[in-house]
Length: 340
Ligand SMILES: C[S@@+](CC[C@H](N)C(=O)[O-])C[C@H]1O[C@@H](n2cnc3c(N)ncnc32)[C@H](O)[C@@H]1O
Image (cartoon, rainbow, N blue to C red):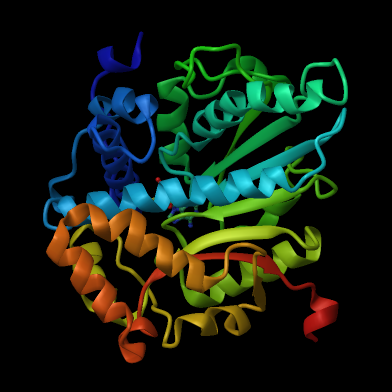
C-alpha cells in the first residue's frame, strides 16, 4: 500500500507537533522561492489527520520559521560532514532526537549526492578515481507512536532494521541520480530513558552530530542537562544542534503548545549567549550565535515582506530584545574534564 492509500494516521499530545513541522516543510516545498525541496514531506502529509488543536498555533509565520529552522540545521549538518576527512572507509552518524516525521536523511543524502560531481572535478586534478562516498548512518529516535508512523510510511527497509546494512529510502531521491549509500535506523523510546545511548546502532568512535530540532523545551530542563551530560561522557567532542525558546516568545508559545496538549516546559533566561555556559557548551566553529542571528534575519524574516524585514532588523539592534530571542544553538559539548 502506498502512503497516500493508507487510512489517515492520528497523533496526539507532543507527538502531534511533528505533524506541524511536517506541514511546514510540505508547504515550503510548494513555494516558488523555497529554501529546499522536500518531496517526502509532501507525500507524507496527506497520510495524517491534521490535529485541530494546532490550528491556532500554525500560520504563515510559523510555517516560515519551521521551514527556515529545518533548512538551517541541514546546512549545519552538511558543514559538519564537510569537516570529516573523506577517505576510504570513513563514516559519520547523524542522530535525530525527537526525529518526528523528519525527512532529513534523504534530504542530506540528496545534498551530498548533488555535490559529488563537483568533488569529482576537484579530485580529477589529483587523481583519476571517483569521489569517495563516506557511509552515513541516520539514527531516528522518537516515541513509539512516531516510529510506528515512520515505519508505515516506509522509511525503513526491513533489511536495514534487521541487519543495519545500507538501505535507501523507498521514496524518491532529490535528484534522481544514483543514491549515496546510507543506513537509516529507528530507535523507539523516550529520549529521557538514557539506555538508548548504548544502542548498538550508535558507534561512539564515529564522528557524530546530534540534532534535537523542536524537542528540548518539551522536556523538563533537568532532563535536558542529563541528556547532554550523558552525551558528553559517551561521545567526546561531539556536535549538537538544537533550538531554544527565549523570553520574547515564551508566553505565546506556552499558550499555543498547552492548547495542543504539549506544554512547553521552560525558556532560556536572557541573554541568548548564556545557553553555552548554562549547558556547558561552546559554539560550533563557523556557527556563532551572531552568524545565526544574521542568517535568520536574511533567510527567514526577509521573506515575510518589507515591513517585517525592516522591523525585525530594527528590533535585533536593541540589545535588550536581542538578548531575549529564541534561536538555533550549534555547539560542541565540552568534556567533563574541561568543565569540572
Ligand atoms: C515539534 S516535533 C519535532 C519533530 C522533528 N524534529 C522536526 O523538527 O520535524 C517534536 C518531536 O519530539 C518528540 N518527543 C517529544 N518528547 C519526546 C521524548 N521524551 N522522547 C522522544 N521524543 C520525544 C515528539 O514525539 C515529536 O516527534
